[in-house]
Image (cartoon, rainbow, N blue to C red):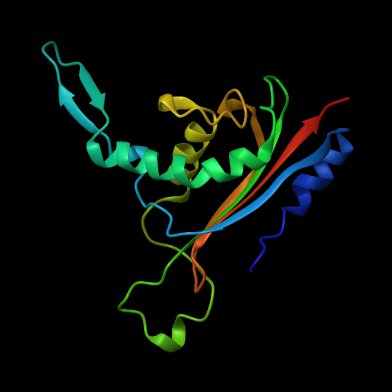
Amino acid sequence: MMHTPALPFLETFAARCGVRWRLRLRWSLACVPPTVTDQQKGARVLPGGRIHFYSTARVAQGRREWAAILRGAREAFGRCIPDPVPVKVSLMIVYPWPKSTRESERMWYVPMTTYPDRDNIEKAIFDVMAGRWGYDLGFFEDDKQVAAGQVSKWRGPEPGVRLSIWEGKVP
């Protein structure tokens, strides 16, 4: 299983500021991650020119899939990290190779440079982790608490999600 290293300058900066991180969860699940993000919402122009955004059935299904994937991690997590405690999250998402990829290339892990965008995946997952949209996962009270971390997306032979969460202690 591949591990993405933490950003060294971030760790050095946090240590100089006196932040101490305590690992709360290291978890992984072999699965095919959803590709749907909240950026795929529908929009309708209302009278007066206002725009109303709404969730499509596809976006709602994507949220349900992320909630189902993360539910196992939540059971292993323990208590919710209360606001305003800082949180650091490391999330590695490995998508399967497309069927059109040659068999000889499918044995490697390669950074994924296609849809969905990494930042949109991050927003969707953190919203579900914070308990938005009616999913009572509650890893932390609000996604604004995520002060550090990294999210990466890959293509690889072992699709799945790898998640690590740290709770910060500020002096």
